[in-house]
Image (tube, rainbow, N blue to C red):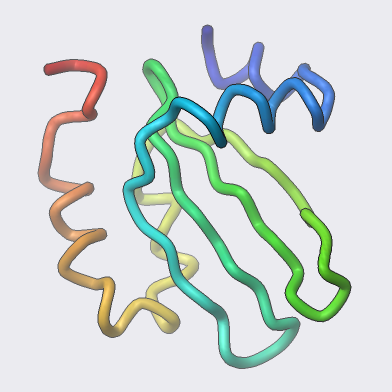
Amino acid sequence: MTATQFDALSYEEKLLIVEPDAPKLAQFLTWYGPQRHITVYAVENFYAELIFDLTKRKVEAINAFETVDYLDQYRGFMSKLEGQIRVVKNDIHPFDQ
């Protein structure tokens, strides 16, 4: 499956792919703007982020991305997780091992 094929799936189909089986690479909370819990998964040959809005108590989005440079947008929220993200950026994707 590619990131494009993943993006074409319904919300339920995406959730069934990431939540039960995909390795979780990082989790973090945003602390300004909308409060969100974000989980980053490794899915075959790409990554996915699940964004859960804590205020509304529902999943806001499940997005696919191919390079971990995408995570730079969250750098301000990752003080404790910066090392984890750095490892993800410098490591081999779990499915490539």
